[in-house]
Amino acid sequence: MKSWIKPFNLVVPVFLLAVAALTGVVWRYGYDQALDQLARRAESDLALASDRLATQLQTYQELAVLMADHPGLERLNLPERVGAANGLLREVADKTGAMDIIYADRDGRVIASAELDSPEDISGTPYFQRATQGALGRDHGQLGGQRAYFFAAPSFAPGGAVRGALVLVADIELIEQAWRGDNPAVLFTDLSGDVFVTNRSELLGWDRPAGGIGLVAPDGTAGAFRTWMFSGHEIWEMGWGPYLPARALHLAQTMPTVGLTGEVLVDIAPARRLAGLQAAAVAAICLAFGATLFVATIRRRTLAEANAVLEARVAQRTRALSTTNTRLRREIAERQEAEAALTRAQADLVQAGKLSALGQMSAGISHELNQPLMAIRSFAENGAQYLERGRDDVAAANLGRISELARRMGRIIQNLRTFSRQESETPRRVDVVAALDSVLEMVSARLEQEGVTLHYDRPPGPVWARGGEVRLGQVFLNLVTNAIDAMQNQSEKSLTVAIDQGPPLTVLIRDTGPGIDDPEKIFDPFYTTKAVGLSEGMGLGLSISYGLVQSFGGDIRGRNSEAGGAEFTVHLEPWQEEQAA
Image (cartoon, rainbow, N blue to C red; front, side, top):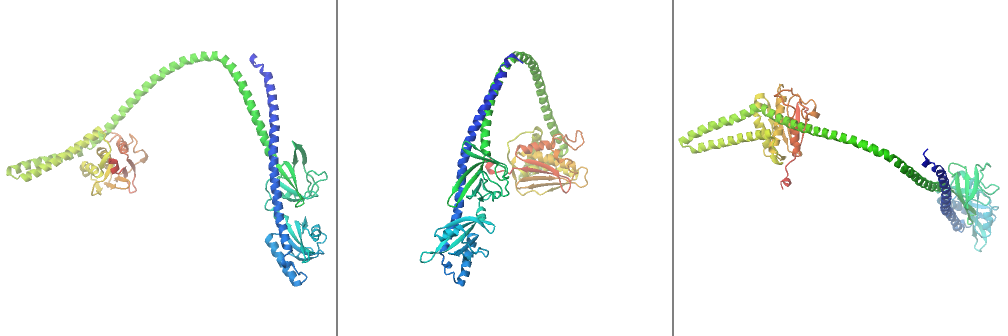
C-alpha cells in the first residue's frame, strides 16, 4: 500500500461511526414527528367513527321517543287494539331496520311487539326500570343471540303518570355493515372491557384481561402481545390476524352518551418507513459526500502519478495517429476517384441503354420518316403540275399537306433528339392523349410488322397532367416497346392501352406476353430477363422510366395480369389551374 493512503485507515472508521450516529438521531427525530402526525390523524379517525356510531344510534333513540306516544299504542287493554299495535310496530321495524320494537305496561309485561319471539316480561332490565322513572333508558346486550342496543322511552298517561314503555332494539350488526373493513381498525368496548362494536369482525367477543391492557380472545388465549410507550404514545405489538397491523398506535376515547369507549389501532409501519427513508437519505448523502471526497483525493494523487506516463503515451499515440491520418487521406482520395469513375460509368450505361433502344426502333423510325418523304415528293410533283395547269387552289392544298408532313417529321426528329440527349424540362401541363398518340404513331410500323393487335379506347378530348411532354413520351415508348418485345414468341399478341381519368389519373399498358418473373426487381438498374447481347438491352429502360415518372411527382408500378401477361400502370398528377397560377 502506498504511503499516502495509510492516513485513510483511521479516518474511514471514524467517519462511518459519525454517519451511523447521525443516522440514528435523524431516525429518532423523524419517527417522533411521524408518530405525532399519525396520532393526530388517529384522533380524527376515532372521533369520526364515534360520531358515526352515536349518530346512527341517535336515530333509533329519537324513533323510540316519537313512537312512545303514538295513538296506535293507546287502549291496548282491548284485544282488537293489540293486533293493530303489533302490525304497526312490525311495519315500523321493517322500514327502519330495527331488530325489534316492544311495548310493555308499567309492570314490564309485554303487550305488543314487532316480532313473535319477543320476551314476555322485561321488568328486570335496567333500561325498562329507567323508563318507568320517566327518563330515557338505554343499555346494550344480547337478544336472540345477536348484539343489540336498547332504547326505552316512557309512555305517559293523560294524568302524567308512566303507563308503560316503548323499547326499540337496534341491530348492531346492521350498523356495522356500513363501515366494516374500513381503515383504521376501530373498536368500542363496554365498561367490562368486552368488544361490543368493531369494524374488524375477528375482534368480536374479545375482552380486556385482568391487567387492563390489550385484549383476550373468547377462548382465553391472549396471542402474541406486547406494549410500550414511545415519546408519549402507546404502541401495541400484536399478532391477532392478517387484517390487524403488527404494530399499532393505540388511542382511546370515552363515549358517555352510549356508555361505550372507542379505541383505534393505527398501523405505525408508514411512520417507521418514513423515518427509515429519512435516515437512509441522510446516510446516503453523508456516504456519498465522504466517498466523493475520498475518491477525489485518491483521484488527484493518482492523476499526479499517472500524468507523466500519460504524456509519454500521448506523444507515442500522436505519432501513430499522424501516420494513420496520412494513410486515411490517401484512401479517401482513392475512394473519391473510384466513385467519380463509377458515376461516369453509370451515366455511360444509361446513355448506351437509350441508344440501344433507338437502335431497336430504327426500322420503325425509318419507315415513319420514309412515308412522309415519299408523300412530300408526290405532293410536290403534283403541285407543280397543278400550277402549270393554273389550278392554284389544288396546288395550295398540296403545299398545306407538305407543310403538315414536314411538321410531323420535325416532331419525330425532335422526340428522337430529346430522347437521345435526355433533356430536362420544367413540369408543365401535358396532354396525356397527345403523348400516347405520338408514341403509338412511332411504333405503328413495328406493331404491324410483329402482328400485334392494338386495343386503345382513345378519349375524345385532351387529358391534362403535370409532367414533361418529352419525358412522358419516353416512358410510354419504353413500356410499349417492352410489351412488343415480350410478345415476340407468343401465339396471341394483343396490346391494351387505356386512360383512366380517376382519380387518380392512370395510364394502363397491358400485354399478352409470358409475364414478369420477379415484380419486385423490375425497376432495379441492370435487371433484365432478356438474353445478354448488343440488341437486347441492358435492363435500364424501366429504371430510367421510373426515375422520369418520379421527377414530376408520379408513380409507376408493374405486376402480372390476372388474364396473363404483364401490366404496367403509370399514376400521374392531374393538372390543376392553381398550379399554373
